[in-house]
Image 1 (cartoon, chains in turn green, blue):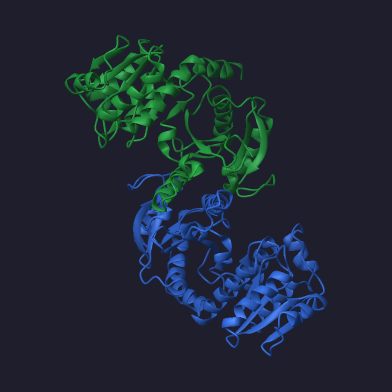
Image 2 (cartoon, chains in turn brown, blue):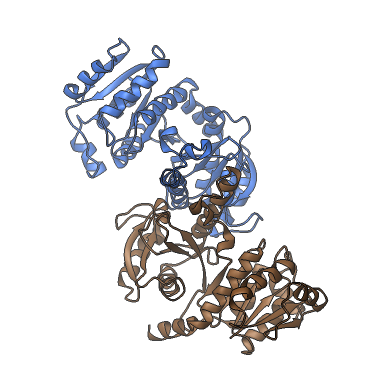
Length: 315
Length: 315
């Protein structure tokens, strides 16, 4: 298995990617071949310093970097030798099986859509975020911000994608799908939710359990919750702010509140595209990078993208 | 000042309304004339038991009750002698200055819209919820669920209504208004948010500070945050679930987390209608009822509905 990491992406790159890789390799030294894409002069000495000169760690020199404020399409086109452009090139040509970056999110999305492309049958690839439940389990909510305006059919596809992710990556056997709504009863909601409900009921590839409300997200009412990306993004950021509360109130040692720390999840995969792409938070720490490598490895191991291809081929 | 309370509304009625009134009267014994609407045979003995037989507490007998699962319009029409119907009758005819109920929310809304009516110029009355900020201040978010599908003009009116509420009721001199969105920059967002931004910029009756994200709700970036009622309802219920977390994790003594307990706010006023109507949570406790009476008194004292009428008259 070959995994590529953009060493130049993230506010604390390349140090945190290197440290994250160190954390990963401590317990998975021979599990994967890691391709570190970045400025050789910066990355190599750090890898040496952290004892990461093993034969399964290869540096791929990228003399350019796409900055946070650059225009995604323009930057990708003009900076062919940037770490992000090289990462997508390696992934598209099959030289690596997964690509991870905490760099310019727009460039990552543009690269994913135009270089890797959506799986046939998927009209809108999506991003998901995990929500820690009070009972210890883990839920998924999607779309988390990629598709801010959605149609009912999109939400139904998110339900299928999320269910497969919950099953193969989170390990939930028969994931229950809920529709985020303002009330429990069928017929509640805005125009989108009202029109989505019957589609979810008819969707034979999911186990639909009805509407869930904002308060249900932390309770164990559904494993996968679907909504438009506007609402999902607000939910995601509110959930992240629960960790802000924990820090400010000196409650971060609480086992449950600690689970809201973004670094536990690392990054979000783009679901519905042909190959594993994982996009990290700009502030990604070593632990976040470690978890992104774990996630990439799991997506490759389980053949997750092939599972999606089959599922949408049958539809 | 005359305030009417539905003694039959709420899961724990009439006991909690009576206890809430007791809490209120302890410190405000002569401030208002209270009209207790409900089944005399149940309410009178309780008022006596709690020592609330003062001359400024009057029982108005209501032989009927609208249940939680009754159809609002039908029930209001058929049960003219219900506590909710009588409450609206007293308010509409000027016999009381404000009406409070934790009963059937739909019936409360229907009564408000058809008996009390929107202020001229207000196209969509709205409900708001307060959000405790980490720095100790209090923010407002609206719409909180009354208008699940909105147009940009509605959000602009919510901004005006919310600003006046923040100024006159919460006591914030020059409230900053934010637009709930998925990013900070102008141009971000779904179709609704993108179209609302320029309207808020042009709205001369508010102090618009730009977009705010889900994580900003607990930080002090804006005093009043506007969004459609679908998103707002999800936010409201997620915020309420923060108190669930506090309880489950035995952190409810944390001063900040405790502020997420719904009973601190009691109920939500319907903003943009001609007279003060306050709708309580079904599970309203004594403290919630006490706070609803306080809120009603403040809305009457400040002449809040007249302030709104003037503001929308000028527009």
